[in-house]
Image 1: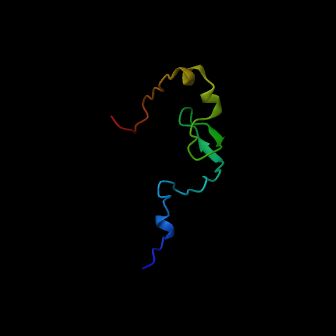
Image 2: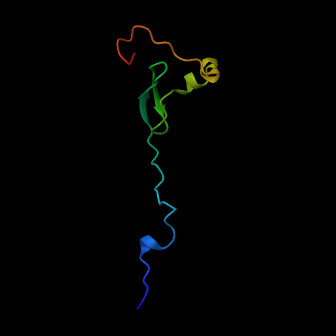
Image 3: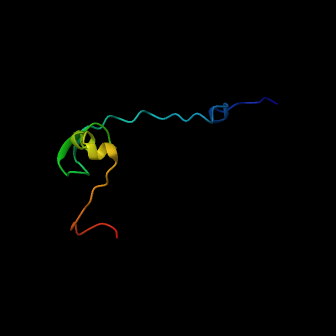
Length: 72
């Protein structure tokens, strides 16, 4: 009887092979000021101008009045 090891059971089950996320640079609307900006990656949703503001650095929430949408 011969023991064979398949590639799936080589002992490296803990290490997942994932490809690096592609750089998706695209024009997006800032979630804070709604201005257009060029985001460098898929999760970047706030523009550099807003991120450099003291309100952003202090964690001040954005107040939205009369937006007509959203959860209550």
